Length: 79
Image (cartoon, rainbow, N blue to C red; front, side, top):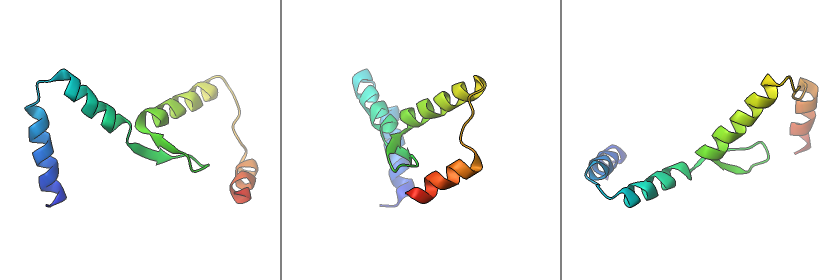
């Protein structure tokens, strides 16, 4: 089956669902899907990724300095 057709079929089926518990399970599945990987190779769900970005923004807003280009380069080359 074509991916586009499969997506449409799933969307139509979801629109017909009236069971809130089932919708919550679907939402959990979508939120827990691997979205990105950290620089250390750890998989991140979309919620973990958003949390990670929020933490970075808080530190940045608080004036915390991140890594310099040279420090980042050394960390990347080590691995």
